[in-house]
Length: 250
Image 1 (spheres, rainbow, N blue to C red):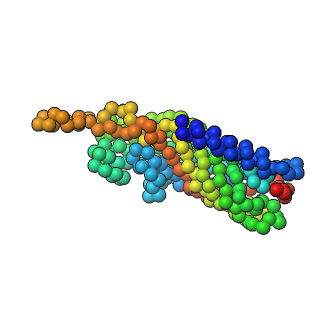
Image 2 (image 1 turned 30 degrees about the vertical axis):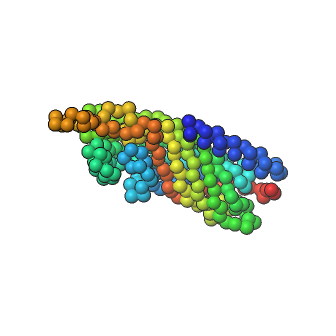
Image 3 (image 1 turned 120 degrees about the vertical axis):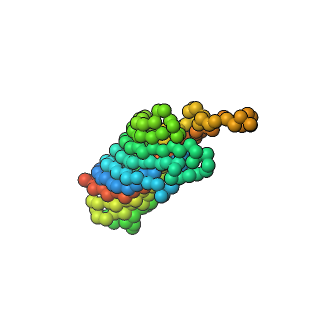
């Protein structure tokens, strides 16, 4: 529900800003096509927060339509590899005992709106760069191999499809009138808790009960179903423009 409320909020802000900030001449359209490479990471039950030491390869291809000097719509296809293991992360004794781990591939299709804070697109622009933010919607197909705990009888291959909410920020630099270089950090809020094959609905980790202490808990929960998994993309892209943009007045 929090993610739905977030989406409604950002869409409301978008329509407000776009409606109040585009009172200009008829819009020229600029189309960009590009790609990029970078790294991907995950956070969930095994890695609780973004860890720059546990990353995999990431790549993307995209097309973009610039409505004006501020707003752009970008559609893209991305691929990323993510992985984690309790034997490496070793968050606490319970995690070491759990001994979960996975390696997976992320295939994402998404569409995002980009908001540029500086006008840098036309040849007479004061700046050759601009920070920007983005948000949107996407869908991810995920395939992986892993185990939820040591001795998991269902260890092995698994796959799933989930909606995602991509958002983040970056900086663009205009190399020439046609070429643009960008660096970007993107967050992906998913609607699944199973990227790492662990959620709170799994049975407790089996453990022998101490006959001398029968009140001791018999198991240990493997995860938290209410805490969804995330993944992240950090990379550099380059794009080529096939048309020009007029200078807009605000």
